[in-house]
Length: 501
Image (cartoon, rainbow, N blue to C red; front, side, top):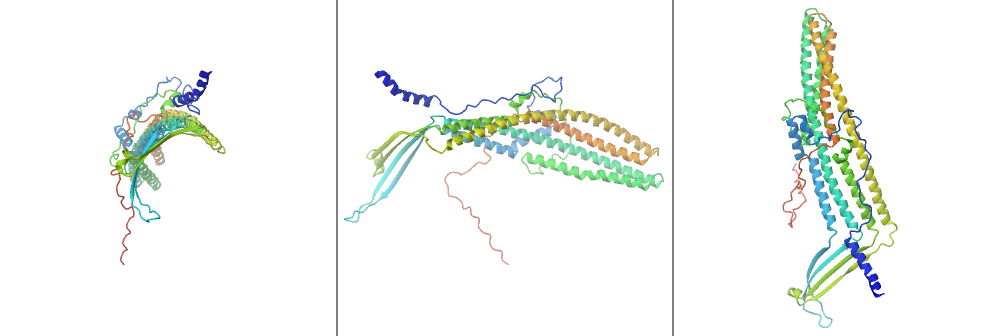
């Protein structure tokens, strides 16, 4: 009987020890979400074997050394990347701060006062000194795992910040590659416009010569001049678009808009992709797309916050203690002083709060559901991006082949029309139409080459290809110097002296 009674008395202590050491938590545990995905890409060729996508340094397969250098410079100097790295440092610091709440805290204090009190009889007394020193400690026991859930959420937030850096790198590299391809395309179109305009000016001169010989009319001269001027009118627009692409590249690399104008001034070929590329299977998106991984980490973070909110509905236990010593001399604090101490637990039990704690838990669950829906949406968006890019690249390659054939035929037709016109065997209108058609076909062919390059870039972005090298996120952008205790300089600017009339 006595042993049974002793066992019942020891039960609360055993239960408390189990709760303290056994990792008791409330709320749901995060599990990686599942979503049914198709077995293959709908836009892929039927006979294509699904190999893992080759995403490492994918832009190097465009075989352009200038592009490779610009991407490395952009990774090092882009300001969006700098902001993403700062977000990682913030998330890491937030995790350390949150995890630190799991441990006891202690602080020391001290004071020195000089006092004097007067008696009613004499009206005077001698002043005296009083010295105090103290040490306080406290520990809020994480009985139901609320603080552990908070640290868990902060850890997931740190993971999400790192994935957001990868997403920023993916966007940056795609933007640099796309703007570079467009800049080279504008250079090619400018060269074509200038060549065509020069050729059309030769046609104007030829028509004037035939007019003087009585073999052409003034209408022919006017039409020839109008066509040459119309072609020349496209040059300013192309120059503007080229300048904007160069300005964007400069800003993407963290430089002023005109920084790369001289460096990119020499015309180079449009980057040509090495095709086809392995695209893997749709399930690879869950591992390769950083935006999908960010969404999953945010969903995990807010799942942990449900447990954090639930823990607030349960009792809380804190252990506090302090020791203080008081003496009339500084040297007495260690020996001839008054010493007092206290130690004990504090139990806090929520009894009535008008449903606020339950509402906070419901808010956390609703936020968790929002992020779960956001994860599902990110997966579907990623699948859509890949499917669109596959179709766009495949169809643009078909279109490019047709345009190349068209440009070849128009080139032959324009050369024949010029020969026949010079010999007087055809009308000027036929020559005019042949030259106009040739310019349109060659310009469309150049734009198609740019489109193939940008579709290739879009496909790699959609698959999740980005920077796979090391990025140092630990170094701050601003290094504070002399941030310790110091006198503050005046922040008030002096007024400007009045200008004498």
